[in-house]
Length: 314
Image 1 (tube, rainbow, N blue to C red):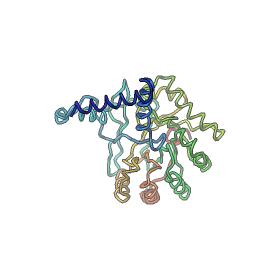
Image 2: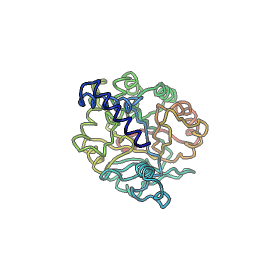
Image 3: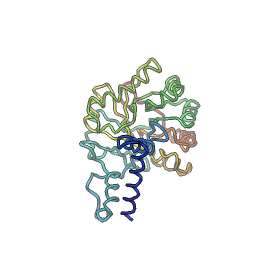
Image 4: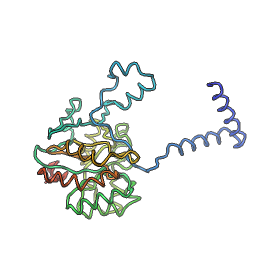
């Protein structure tokens, strides 16, 4: 079977070389094919958020995982890692219930000392934050709900949203929401040099300024929750506070949206004082359940704060 695949690959290569007139052109064909097959169907979208509470340090898999195949073990290590590149970390916050407030993971105890925020004061306040990289009809619905309820939100956006949906970005600003920096292109920022890191944030600043004539709010959320101590310090040096979260759930996959009823139960059961909740406004489930969530939160005695309050800027 292996020999057959090799033979077929060789035949394909010879045919392409003959038709294109050389290996240089053949290599170009391969590059174009790879590029086409790996292109994002939803440009600049955040297509993965870490599964909270399931990260362990790289290389500390349990005995059961050691007996997996090499391929499966590599996949497990990649998905379950806290520490990956250099000092890179993947933020997670284990879900608590009955109003219990989550604690900062022990391996990230230095977070707040370097300008990171994930939880507010121990009072009945919720901070609504949204990661918005593109529009699919649901971002507008989320804005409609916030407008009807007269509630503030913080939208961490990408350059793509400014380019493709400038009217939505202007609406966020005009309706009193904080428009914040989620980077321009959504890369893994732990793999960037300081110069590259700063350039990525400035590109987002420039896009927002070109559209609105105003400065983007100085709050930064690292793509996929990936960061390092250096990242936090670099962001702070640019005037940013780094905003993570104390609650999030699996709402980001448009092809596997969670059940609305169970999602309401899950989110409400995880509600706690000072909660910084991360929601993806592209989620059809979130667009459907947000009014009910807000109703129940209000019945529980919660009010809704802003990141300026969270970070002591009021």
